[in-house]
Length: 487
Image 1 (cartoon, rainbow, N blue to C red):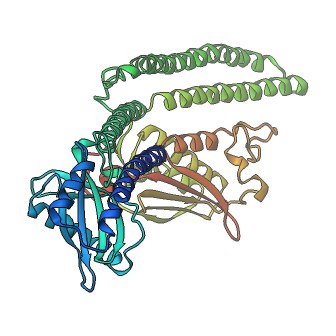
Image 2 (image 1 turned 180 degrees about the vertical axis):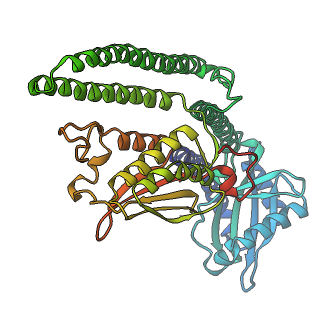
């Protein structure tokens, strides 16, 4: 909008100024023409036609270094004008060129009809010698001998800087301004393109860091714009901090888990002699020992969950990606759950399309599928079925995992992916739950980090369906063949 509006506004302002300047200049030269016509009027309107040599001498009185004066006559009873005098003398070819220009403009035809009026225009034409001539005034005089017309003209070179008879857009000033403006536009576009190219390199570098691709290089190495040097340096520093933070989180998760596991193991070992020392009829003591063991189980689960949360956070910060054969990975995980399916007397239904390739982190995808399969198996009643379907469609891999369980209350469908939200019934007879509601939360976070989506919906008459959508790899989207994909 700026590129379009600014030149239009500036052009309009300067055009108005140019027209004002032209009007003042034309008024001056036309007044000069009127004075010449008034001085020649007694001679031209006399009853007898003046002799041609006398006309030439009379014109010489009014011509100067800037103004050329010519006389045209349309004899009474005839049509058309003839040049009868000129000062300074000019060639017949120049007179013919000027008369042809006036004829094309329709000026001569209009004057020959009434021989009165005035034409306020500046007519530029090219004379045979190659220079430009500007007709500045035409004053008709009606006489018994016919219609006389006093024409004053000026050589274009005699009015330096004037644009008389020429459109403003054709002036040298406009052309120079247009050239400067185009140069500025080119410079601006080049600058924008350079910045855009630098930012695209930054984006590619950020993408390669996020996907942990080899050869990504640093932001500083890929930047060739001096103004972005400080930004590139800060980005490199930020990446280093994130990498260090991911390593620290993993190390802290391992250290914390080990620190908690050791006292838990010591307490378990210490309970064994205590259990043997309590008499069988001491129900209160046995119940206390049982509560301690149950609390240890829950504490052990909390430690494991905390470690999984820390590792999941570190995975999001340090997540190498590659082309993964999701079909093969899903097949392996289904095989790993075969014993659980047999133990619960569950049947497996569905279809897995072959060679569905995604660009993702295999461990993160494996975590998602394991959580969904575990939930489907655990919630399905014995003798029921678990449905699994995988297909590639519209640039995405669509994975469906459904169970035959009780489903989820409609108002909680969106909450099941929240951290620590769980509707699972207690799995122990003592009323304590060892599930902490982080499996689906991790699944959603992993899927969204990989650029996909996950949602749940209830089935009829019962059951829950999980829909996972992950972007296909570039090779799969282009319809090519993968080169040694993982999985």
